[in-house]
Length: 384
Image 1 (spheres, rainbow, N blue to C red):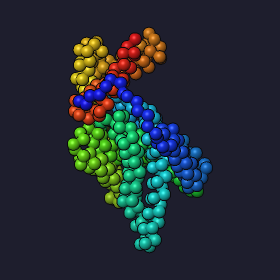
Image 2 (tube, one colour):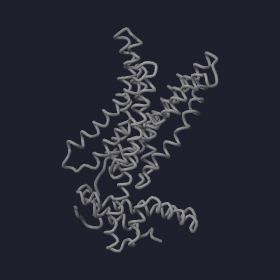
Image 3 (tube, rainbow, N blue to C red):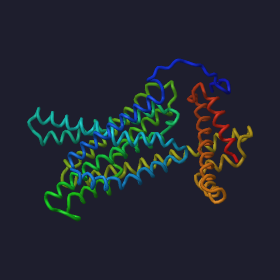
Image 4 (cartoon, one colour):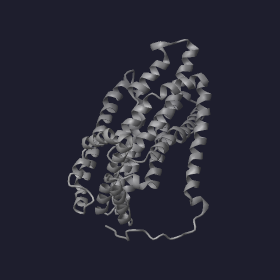
């Protein structure tokens, strides 16, 4: 492990205005806000005001469920909410804007070049859209990986960041599809179960709300494995995210092209690929989460020997059931503030365990001792 003084020596350096935190945050928020306004205008233009409102009301239904699922996966060492808000906003605004503009431009260009609009639509859906959309969503994962590196430590973090980004993207896309379907029903006079809106809702919201998250999670897993690699494996760290992105594009292309496989092509792809892939990835993430709990149980006993923790705490902190019981006990005896304090204590102890593991593997960085001491001080002050 690298060592350094317990408290850092502050060196005053001149920073340019664009390097200041508030400038970067302001620029990012402005970019996302402008993207949101533009995509809002584009979607409303295509669906009409009434179609937009109907699409918005229906598209929002799976969002809380998906967000809760990804937050549940991240319960062992939860990342900050600001990262998740950024990812959702990027997917819903920036990535959606890039996709709608690039897909439309590419499809029109192909139609003009080939004079075959039908083939252009098919090629756009099966080739152009997967490449553009997965690249746009992967940009959010890359940004968190580069600029929030301390919050991106493994596979679960990659899955959560990618999944939340894709949830935002699917939310905006569903508004467009459902709003357009409602407009079609208004023209034809269809309503109820036989309507295009009901069919679109069933396919996109009931049967496959996990489709976009499933694709992009493959990219997140690539980044997550790269985060576990040491600095000596630079080539592997570069190739793994790229491999995950290519897999995401491939699965996305297969899903979009399922209609070309005949009358039952969609159901065949859904049953043969989507459902098994979803089950496999769910098992992988839960297995990884159990390994994270094992890391907590294995690393924290060193702090018991040093007097920072009691002997029973590593085993209690390494069990999700014990953590939940501790929060419930605190809530009964000390109210919501007590439960929040216990949750912060659990999160801080988990961060200490993961930092120690990275330190043993040479991946903690030169400020390992400073960060370890800071976490332990917070842990100590939260004990009461």
